Image (tube, rainbow over all chains, first blue to last red; front, top):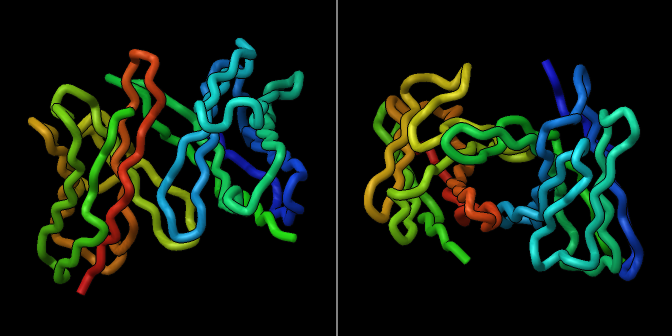
Length: 120
Length: 108
């Protein structure tokens, strides 16, 4: 059974970049749409974008356009989310989540989350 | 963009039924999904496509959707049901997925 294993917590300076990984333990992401969803402290869930590794064509939420990049390794077992020009408001737990479709798309499998703190 | 509105909190006594609503313009025409999130943990899918339960989710958790309101119903509430619950929709028309603001369920 596939599990999503994320990289560890990070502390970043304002203006720097972060790169979080999400590895499919027990499988690959090859044709699975992978989204990143973040959650600021004591806040709700915010969708950031979606990526299908074997297609290589990400779709980013408008508010992250220009700052967000999704990539995958050649084996398509690990996907990466890079967010640049960090500010304090980017402090959040970042989750990777696999998307599935029934009548519409939903997230059936989640990583445990990666806490990123942006602070000077 | 499409907006989903949830009450910030719902309280219920053990053994009773909890109803958590998710309001949206003509949401009955969309497919609604629900997630449970316990403190310090990742969200878990509990209902998809209005009322379908993933494997391992008990039958006392159900969903419905009509008009301008979708509802997650938890019967025979237990202390372990205390969590945040989020609704979500994702149309196939190219619009991004949207989450409701979340509802904290408190078991009295």
